[in-house]
Amino acid sequence: MEILMQDFIDIDDAIIVSLDEYVDSISDSSYRGRVLDVFNNVRECLDRLSRRAGRTVGVPDIRVKLSDKKTAEANPLGSIVLTRGIIDHCLSLKTPAFQERPEDPALFALDPDLAAMLGMAWIVSHEYAHLYRAHHAVEAFLGSEVYVLRAFEHDADLVAAAAVFRQLQSIVGFLFPDIQVRQCTLSSIYWIVRTLPDTHDRTGVHPPFSERFFQILLKLVTVVTDGSEIYDPDCLRHETQVRRELLIKTAVACEKAHKGCNDRSSKGYFSEWQDYIERNGHTDIIYDWMKVSPHVERFSGTIADMSRQNPYRGKIL
Image 1: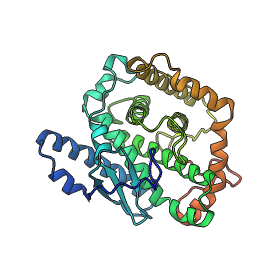
Image 2: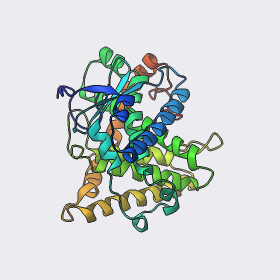
Image 3: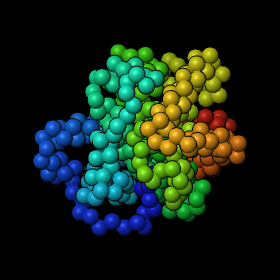
Image 4: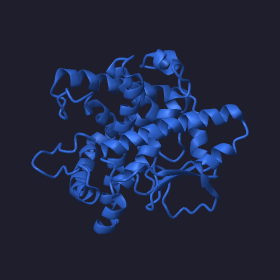
């Protein structure tokens, strides 16, 4: 299953090498070091996600396709293939100046490649979710209906968002307030994907990223800080409501900054979010996932089933 960009039938015959081979081939020592740092963070994120999943599927090998296309895909045999183009995209990302960010500038000052690290971790964790949540097996059982495939993308998006939040939390959670960690996670995912060329229209089974980002935002509102926090999917608690408002402001600030650097005449995500809500797209995808989730739980052995009496049973992801 390929993330975000193109259908699997778009064959690219570029050479595929191991991640180590790719890193060794980079002649620029500074860039090589940056790539190593990004993937050390990715491996830590995957290992943490594997532990949370009960190690049902081990941390996969990462391989690199020597293509300038910007794609990533999970191989059903257990590896994740990234293109050189998607790696370059993450590391060449230009984000707004610190003063235009809603997050604490000191957080990003820790590492200039922090957004690249988190964005790549989200991309790879999304693909890993396809593997350890047994999406290929479920697809073989249910068939390749559009609602099934979109439910998989929804699941992988949210699993990956929570994984990146946990990863950043483990690195800086003792230095920065929880809301800053969430804001940084949200904006890093936004900038990595918003600046890709093939994410703004419906491509294959992937909904527009504006819709997926809306769901990622909701996930980062409701994912608990730790085991002592009460899960609040309906945002009934004051603390969750405050978190929701601050993360919405973060999303709006990101889109305003993006529009300021691009086509200012376009309404961008603002009109797409309004349309998404007006046609109940934000709830339709939940219903699709509720239909598919029992099969994901059965085939993967991980908690996923949202069809039972408690509709939020999948909360720990």
